[in-house]
Image (cartoon, rainbow, N blue to C red; front, side, top):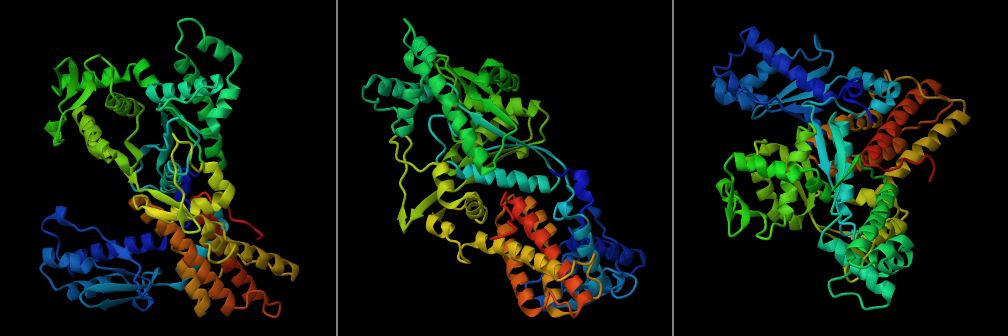
Length: 565
């Protein structure tokens, strides 16, 4: 992945450059007396620039004048006019072609064609860096996701965390963050023993226990138990379910890793719950809480005073019989993670875990960690639909669709696109038939087709003796070219917004918009024209820059960019 240093070498985002120009104009207006100095420097508003919904209002606009109206005690239109004069549009500032003031105080700016020309040249010169942005606030971030217990194959029900987590990591890395991907699994406890009991029962030809697991995968495990494991499980004094469960959960984890690898999801760290106890992290966490006076003993149990931090009740750390709760492992995990030097922890959990968030954040605060650096993203439910009917799933009953089943049905690219195109916290229906469609009804197919179409155009041009120029100087006065380059230029802005929002649906929307704009450009502009080689070469350059942008947007989502379809 690109480092923050490499990202800084990327062609600079137009919106970022305009923001700097507006800040400089404000500073100039204060220095020359056109605008007064803010009496309270701490009240300085953030300078925001946005793309107007209507292109007639310019390429970008800022509402800074309206933000300054109250603290400067001046009409926003007057402030906007002074900013417009200070920005030097069409003269001393080569970035801004024009600056217009609009009620009630907007400053609408048009970017010079020369800036877009330089941007395209930069994309063509450094394609791998395009769209990556330097970190505004570099952080060392730990993202823990999936973390499904290794008691059965990864189902599509809990696989959404894999999509959301991997997509978030890719976006954060594109924004210059140092990211560690982590999977936390329960390799001990009742669930693993229940799995072992289920495998033992099937191997012996007995009914699976009521609290056990069913399904073809249990039968497969029963056939695969190694002789030495079975000997250990059936030895005198051994608990067969625990012995076989430990082996079976390890085998299931191997399958989970293989499924995730097929999806293109990797992890830097696999952390087991048992290790938190074995390595003393739970004891360290309890000691920190005890030092702060946040722990007490009652009825033989050890409690955390969670109510001191707004929780509805205190939480048990150790039961009266001395056994630790899941909460005990959770607080040990917080301590263990921060001990590795992370600035920020992100947990991606299902929405059914909402009740766990407050107690863990409270414990982090009580242990002396900044609770703002303990973040939980709750992801919504997904219903998988085939021919309008929901696919029901239960891992215990053995009636579920695995992640591998989904990838077999729709492919990795379509699966990734459909998850990326929805906000992570929103529940939605995944229409398997639509995802399988090889037509414009399938949005990922539509975007990939635009990339493949450009590849075909470039091959056709080469056959005609034409090649892309190194830039597009003098080309952008035409409407189809101007419209396309303005969409193309927005990729780093989309990445910046995605990093801030920690969401990816804007990237899929952007890729679709760019594909649509390219199809319109190709319809209205003759790209391969041997009779006009100079203009063809520049249009080919614009097409190639669009191809790079599509590929990089798809790459952010872990989706392939095919050369042929």
